[in-house]
Length: 231
Image (cartoon, rainbow, N blue to C red; front, side):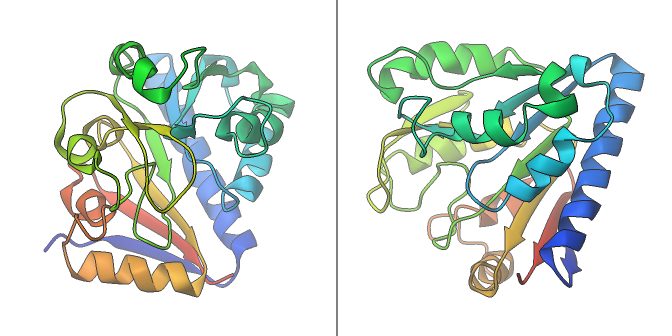
């Protein structure tokens, strides 16, 4: 079974500092080597301190492209919008110079936007860093174990898939496993004992239908690192 590199921290501040430093170094090196860099981030409450710290970090932001791993199909001014989250916590201060590629469109539904957004995201180069979160049910991005579209999201060759989880509100547009793992570095940013219990089970038992996250930590073609703090 593939070994997963787990970095454990005493508190969330130490985790935030370490992950920010690591991601900043990756993006800086990417720009130096290839003239540009691409960072994929996730929504939710967990990454807010990281986004705030990254936004104040000196980087060649004008050469960095940022996009989301997934988006709820709600208007961008909704408090449940990941678009709103990163625009208010990450795409400001020094990071305001970054290029942003949004997932939400004027389409009536995520499903109707699936093809055009899949083509857009698929045309982007290999990502330099992907920072994923995880739900208490083992989902990552918007690839939920309860959604009918899980198989497409986990095994399909398209870059994006519309999903409708049964255990959470809103239709969503999610990058697929294949597109997310087309990255030079993959990180899982996890806080809380409850989520660690789920992630530990997913690491120990490779069961992607129960824990979609397990197919990321075990199936990634590049090293996968977990950054974890209990609180």
